[in-house]
Length: 70
Image 1 (cartoon, rainbow, N blue to C red):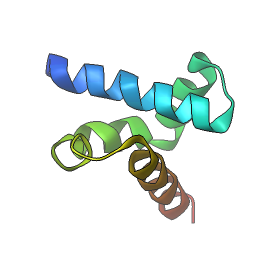
Image 2 (image 1 turned 90 degrees about the vertical axis):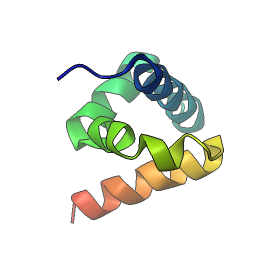
Image 3 (image 1 turned 60 degrees about the vertical axis):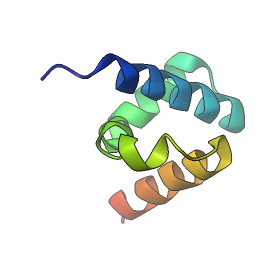
Image 4 (image 1 turned 30 degrees about the horizontal axis):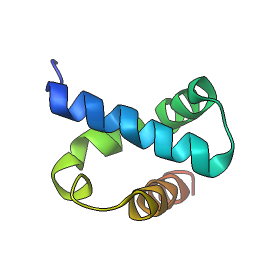
């Protein structure tokens, strides 16, 4: 499946927000988000998330991961 360019840029931005907030390297953040399925969540929820701010996005990702790992 081909991911639209704007969604790829958004995913990259979310990885940057997440790494900065959590004190991770870009590679660590991306691998963690991929392992937990959060990268798919970010792409799937692009329409709703891309109009919010970084703190909301980070909280949303954390909530998604928390719910997935129950």
